[in-house]
Image (spheres, helix red, strand yellow):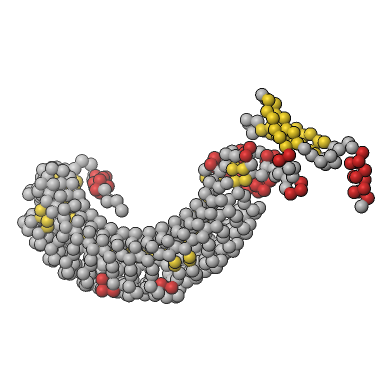
Length: 522
């Protein structure tokens, strides 16, 4: 959403020049890298230089104090093919300012915070124009007829203005237009007539506006669309079949809207050629079948409110390479949810509420390259979970409450073998037991991964007391007269080594020996 820095253009021009610019005959306060090109970047220049050669083809003005373009301003330069004004102080452009520039092919008037409109006939002589950029001004209204003469126009950008309404048929005569960018305005709605005449349009950007509702026929006039960008609006729902006419659509970006559910119904249930679908940052709580998206390679569902997913939701998405489910509220995943996704390269499941995973969850993901499981509620991973991975890969596992006991053996061994592929390995920490808390999993010795007894095998620690005298610890436990007891004391040293001492207590009371004999004869 940031403005494109004019310095990039300036640097590109400087790099393209061969040697030092020849300033002979070059206008004052400007640079001429070739006889056909003039670049003026003086911040104090209030008007255009008057001694610009009639043979000049490209005239570029950046960051000047120029405020007005009059009918005579460019009269002496009829052979211009490229005219660029970026980050100037323009307040007004006369309707006849470009009247003499019939050869113009590229025109940009961008970055003028006081320019709030253009006259309907401003481009009446620009029949050869192929590119028109009107970005980051303060244009509030575009009058009908403004673009009627631009029959060869291929790219029209008006992003970053304050246009609230598109009066149809505004683009009726732009039959050659392929790219239309209306993003970052205040447009509240679009309908079928909005895009009348744009039968060759391939890329439409109307992102970051105020659109809350799209009529079911909104895109009937642009059947050749390959990219549709609707991110950053306030769209609540999508009508059935709204995209069914867009049979060539490859990219659909709906990021940052207010959708609560999504399915393939807006595509009419027919097989879609869609390759990239972005639904990040909506309010999705449910996701229905996506079976018609057989060509889908990238699916972004991050930053939504989903807690569960249907087992077959990705069943036909066998072309999928990138799947982002991060920053949701997923508590579990069906064991076969990724079945058939053999070509997938990246799966992001980080920042969810996952507490366990099925051992066969990634059974078909042999060639995965990135797997993010960080920042969940995982305490351990089942044996064999990541064994299918045969290609070089990176994994993120940090931010989980790892329980470093006997159940972590598989993950511990896997991390030691594949540590180079575990990103942020030093942040993958044990949370329990207490004596290993905050220690990196990779630094824990295998002999430290032990489990406490459970049930009737576990000593009732409430019957034990502890006393500490200087460097001496005394533990007193009450035990049954005939109960054997083995006490192991493990001393964890600074280097991670463990020194263990064992104390065994065997009952010596004859009654206990007799009791043992009775039990043995039963």
